[in-house]
Picture 1 (cartoon, rainbow, N blue to C red):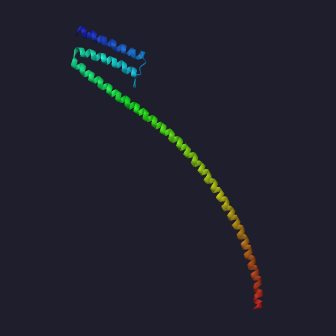
Picture 2 (picture 1 turned 90 degrees about the vertical axis):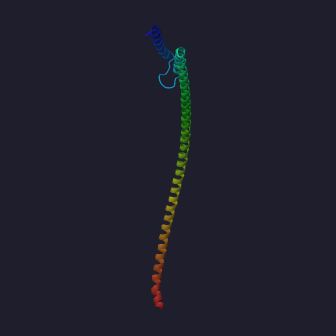
Length: 163
């Protein structure tokens, strides 16, 4: 193994360690979308591309294409993420508005229910009053009818005597 290769590997190890330290210093998130982490790794990848391009131009160009593809993919994911967050917010607002509308509708229906129950009670009271009045009228009619029958029965012997 050549001494130049060993120096390169050592620099790489030192560079990797310093990248880790820089990630900690700049408080980069370990997971998820993190602009700090993306920037530091982008700088490392650009330096790697530069070094590879010096030794082999074709590999360097290929790495440039890979870098550009990665950036486009990350941009697409970022757009998708932002779109999904906006969609989620819209849905949450719609749900909140729907909840408010439903609560208003519930209040209206409860008021309507109270009105209908009041109407039912009024109609029951009227029905009870009518039934009571009709029962009293029936009692009076039955008494009147009984009296008429009694009068007719009393008049009947008198009518038979006359005939």
